[in-house]
Image (cartoon, rainbow, N blue to C red; front, side, top):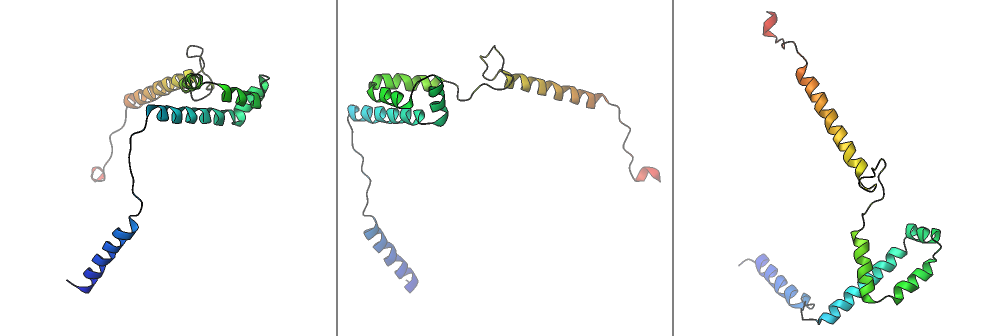
Length: 144
């Protein structure tokens, strides 16, 4: 074995021996611990949501102070927090699109109508292109 290979092997042995101080471990946790962690995470997510500027302005326009809403969230039970987070999770992510129709409640109606009109316009343009007569292509050899 060459000196370089021996040195590399020694370096690898030393690094594996001394650098693997941290080890991962897995253990069982109780259901109550998992539920508590989830409830705390949901409560924190709700408080973060209340901290957003647009939510604060909407609360202010309704006459509700942000601190009162935060106090109410702090007083809610875990079941109430889960229910509220479920309702927030089921709401549409965006606002009303411009041109949104009433059939979809204003969410996405304009987007689908736009796509239909765009596809029809492309179909008409393709049909016109296909129906247009064209002259045969002249090659260089045809002029001689």
